[in-house]
Image 1 (cartoon, one colour):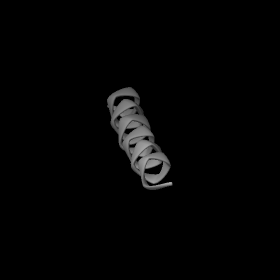
Image 2 (spheres, rainbow, N blue to C red; image 1 turned 45 degrees about the horizontal axis):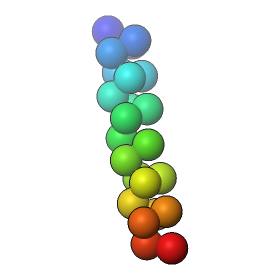
Image 3 (cartoon, one colour; image 1 turned 135 degrees about the vertical axis):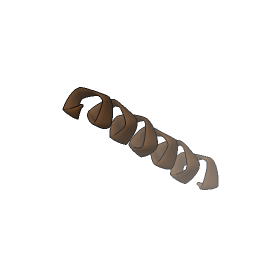
Image 4 (cartoon, one colour; image 1 turned 180 degrees about the vertical axis):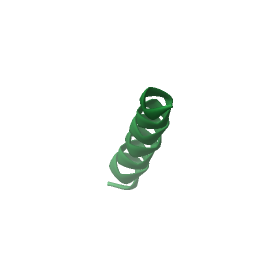
Length: 24
């Protein structure tokens, strides 16, 4: 459903942020 999709999108977004922070 939309809620599950949002949770997945949020997790993916957080993973990307963590990768960017790790690169800095």
